[in-house]
Length: 75
Image (cartoon, rainbow, N blue to C red; front, side, top):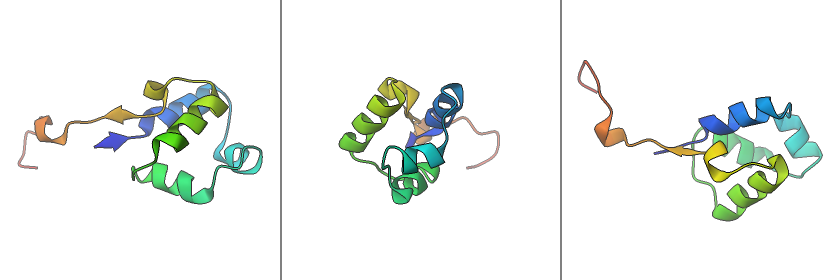
């Protein structure tokens, strides 16, 4: 599963908001919604976000291997 959790930390570090992404840079509300729910994004969108926020891909997303998550109780 791809998680966009790093992106929210990167935005905070850059003192940017989703409002700025939408109004100043034209990122759609739908893209923000997809990221908040860890839905798929195109590599073009990832590229655009990296350019806007001036960061690397790993500052936007991370892969989480759900098959190898350790759980004390059945998942």
